[in-house]
Image 1 (cartoon, rainbow, N blue to C red):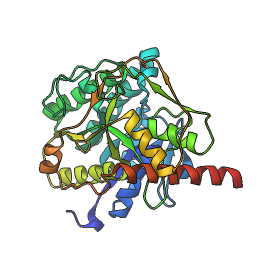
Image 2: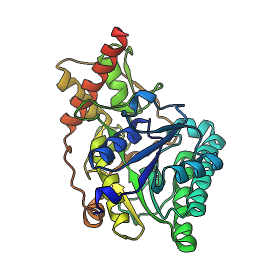
Image 3: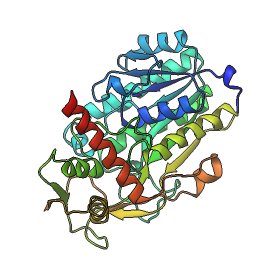
Image 4: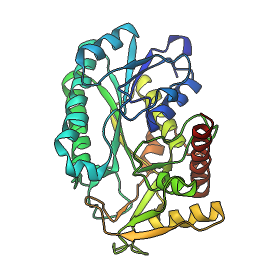
Length: 337
């Protein structure tokens, strides 16, 4: 690992958002200098820790990105900025190709022009589509079934080609379902329009929503509801730091799943929320959402072999408890403001 005094700055795009803000915290905890670029369309200025420069702007602005890289002596880019709502991507595909794919192209080109040769990319298990087998390993066919997944896969292809042509080494991290909040209470999910199951459940638990809807209970799974591999956001943040260390040590490009290799159904997650709360939640069943695969569970052997990464929060009860604690904090802050 590099001497902390010699480390170059890490540019985090989307660092005011849910996952990006946790990665910023992990980088700071590890001694890396950080600069954030975020347009604050979904992120929060308050999520940026004191002392971290925040440049408010669009990742698709080539002049802005070039200036930030130069002024802050950026050595690695971690790219989180983008749109992430699967049903919305079906309704507004061109927005997703513009915000996710076209803007990523601009960012990659800025790296090439500035001589930045390390890139960590926030990808998704949605690139696998309707996987033929589970758990899903990194060699599984990539056949996304929604524009969100396709927009991310296109960026993976661009990074692969940029590595061959320009020497831009990257670690692509394919997330499964991210959940929970910083155990120290420093950050959590603050999405204005929540679509993640656990976030919605936490809002119902704190009286911000009347009920929670299960989108389809007729899937080919044990209880008919979708199965997902939930990873604690702080473990995911640690995986990004491990990817950075890998690249700084001269490591080659890698594509790695980020999950625990254990799937939970929607009903199992809601059962755990109710168990932690000690009371039932109002739950109703509705129709399936477009673009939702029945099951997504990661094969995780490769990330443990390629990176110095060991999960510390792989417990559904703990994930749920941290999400509920964060949501209560948000409610209390709102009430006192």
